Amino acid sequence: MELAPVALTLLLAALAAAADTTPVNKSCVTGSAGASVSIGYGGASASAGVSLGADAYRSDCPLAEEIVRAAVDEAIAADPRMAASLLRLHFHDCFVNGCDGSVLLDDTHLFVGEKTAVPNANSLRGFEVVDAIKAQLELACPETVSCADVLAIAARDSVVASGGPSWQVEVGRKDSRTASLQAANTNLPAPTSGVATLVQKFTNVGLSAKDMVALSGAHTIGKARCTTFSARIAGVGVSAGSANKDMGFLQSLQQLCAGSASSSALAHLDLSTPATFDNQYYINLLSGDGLLPSDQALASPAGAEDVAALVADYAFDASLFFDDFAASMLRMGRLAPGGGRASTEVRRNCRVVN
Image (tube, rainbow, N blue to C red; front, side):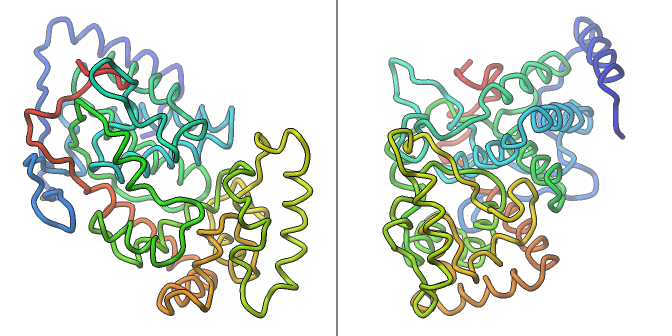
């Protein structure tokens, strides 16, 4: 059901009025269709005992996904780059102690959050969009929809808004009461990582090499700073036997990043269709036009044969990529925080614990 902005505003107002007289059910329920799954690393049961289901908010917050979708669409219309930014927030959340919204927490006197980690500092964007979404959800159904679920839904909606595949997001996550700067610095892959390191980083959280290749396709949208691909300019990742076809691309990057303002210069991760979620990313890799060293490494004959074969498969079959990307997003979305229910909650403000 699509709601026009005016209709959505009126409905939110009605829900807010009803909330004054109607007790709020703050539990997460599993849909009758039996779409629940136990979340945990590598498919194991999560220590938090959380159950995910596609219909978890059907009774408690039936307009949750509609509220998120409308806000995401508005944000991307104002800034197309926001699609990649919101998608990236979900990635960087899930890879650090599971999908628990910890990436959104500001620093406190008790802990240093993840925003200043090397992979995140001056890089992650979209926090204000998440704040706006959460404020609307708290008006409609207080203390019901977690910040971690907002990230998961917004990631899917960002992909769809950019022309990519859709999938039924599993919801019911809880939010962490703490964050880990150390884990963010350790767990997140670097833009200079080789194939072996990338595979290991994904294996560490229970995801496969196939998940790694499929999820790397998220780089079909978005931008990166010159500092993240300086190694490519220096020739790192140039495919054996294909240096000539790489050179024009690398020279264009050198021109972009030359000068005193190079540290703030941005390049499209996919120069061909930068705002469209498609399989062009893999086609670029086969042509030697991967922006990050970690991107171009996937197509290198010196890497793992199965990884390079998947790159070729996705380059020639967009439908296969879409299917595998959606499946891998669901698997990543099941990465669970540890510590039990006592260490989680549904935050009212995604930046601070309740």
